[in-house]
Image (cartoon, rainbow, N blue to C red; front, side, top):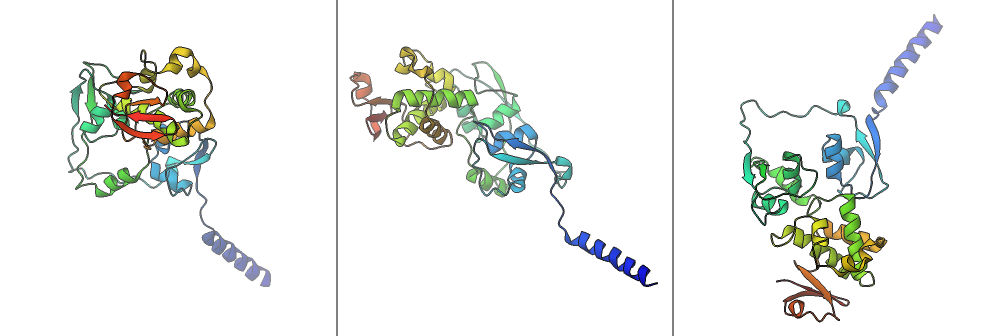
Length: 280
């Protein structure tokens, strides 16, 4: 009789312990961050929201680095998404015909969108667009209906333009060739000028096209663009890609030895080391 009493007590104890032990999080797999990755691109690849990836990895900010291992949640283990009410009308998309001088960044800015939204809506793998092209333009939700989403969007750290690993490498190599021996601010400034040109309707609309435009950057002509980038230049390029612009919107740069009368006639917006940055 005593044996059965002890057995019942043991069963009850095991059940209680089972209730006290927290449930183990279920992950689909682990992802190793590569150069050029962001939480946004990783979330899009895995169809998981940024917030859920951050929660699964106890991240308090959006900054990640190459080599970092992230837990990607199993979608089946996540709570069901709250669906909008059936009676709530969803805004329709509109279309836009690309005009000469347009860039994806400019079109996105005019419509209160991020370039990534246009890329997703039009299944674009890059930012290259051409005059006459028809683009689907998603209608942005009104601020009054999504105040929390607007606050999150403003606080999230995302690149100023979409970029690939190849874009980052090319931009870093230009920074190395143009300002490798200059202060970090000067190196960030070189990258920022390239990005400012991409965003401008006056220049080409991709990093590659801006850098390889005829007669713009001497490292392209003398072959120095093919030299590997330094680690400092890579970090400087990343800083610029994520919004750091110490040039105050400059579209040109040159050093103290430059004798080009056109460049010397431009309004100077910043100076770092031997580098001078100018607007038009």
